[in-house]
Length: 186
Image (cartoon, rainbow, N blue to C red; front, top):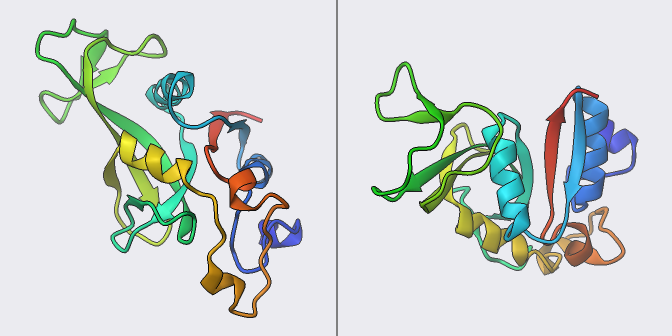
């Protein structure tokens, strides 16, 4: 309702990461930070450190029929809440400063903010999409690729006779290569 009241959406669509960040900061007791420039490079480390600190990330992506990321040029653009990461380390990687989970032997949690462990071979993200009842593990690269190709508004939606709020530069400007980091506190 807040998104409707503020003119960010008409049908429930959110094609602007900047508007999503404003909305999150208004609705939740958090500080929202718009991340631009894609999900790779320095942003990858920022996202993984942010998740390790226990903070969620909102990421736009194209949703496949099983809710996983796909590449449909933005035709199926949706938002996911990413709340954790699973890092697969090489067997010879140095042990990071972690604590073992009390209920799941062999699962370790970081002891707080700090550098990412060395020797990461695989990275998976714990994500949830609003239409799904379940959390899923997605490959980081799979989500990054989906996020990086959000460029076009669906021709089917454009011709359905409904009104949508789309930024002047389209999905390329509003969603492509962007995410929202949610920090605790106002």
